[in-house]
Length: 277
Ligand SMILES: [Zn+2]
Ligand SMILES: [Zn+2]
Image (cartoon, rainbow, N blue to C red; front, side, top):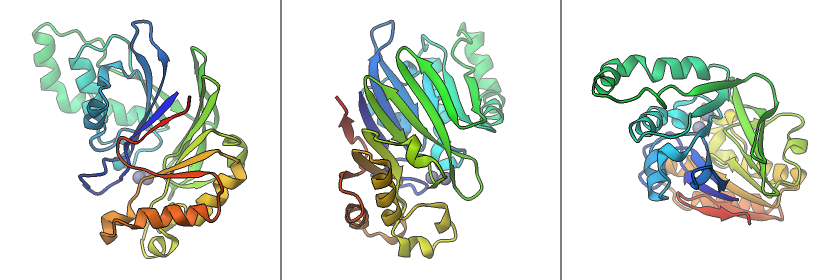
């Protein structure tokens, strides 16, 4: 199993850090291509996919953590380019309640003329309309070909936000959206081989932001990783440098985490790959 962080940034239009997105590669599909599950689809996610030589139309499972625009803004391009490139398998999108409304309004209505012109020239509708699964409750989400996904909620400024756990090939990976863990999170993430968690800024930085309470501090994240007993931690959603201009801030956050967590801490970068064996 291999995780690739496609985008290590967030809202700001940082050319070095695309918006939130990551993929897990494991096993093979029936046609011999890699099985790829994608988590969030923020700004430039599809560009980063192409840079990893992963055709968008081969990604058949997309898991959205929440509907803040930085995490979902590339969804229409992902759906459309997959359709245009004749995806072979149906696309299924998981997400919080509200995802169905989002997809139904995002995919068909604004592109009515585009769809009509392509279908008028013989294009099949297959692959255009994703199947949407809204996750109502924490727990098991999907079991498929020996791999499974589950989800819990995090506290993120009042917007419903999920954190996913994936098991496959004897490995367990935790992939957060934004926000703070709720009770029971440590059991959910217990002994994971890798936890990929947002780290938006230092405590002092977050205290100055109107949205600062929506995010976890590096020290609390280090304590969380210790409580969970995860082996490795990868931080992403690295907002602070966008606002302060301080490119060393991410490494400062990594050092702060290391004072609270003995495992390996990796500071995210676009294209960073973690091979889980
Ligand atoms: Zn975000
Ligand atoms: Zn958010």
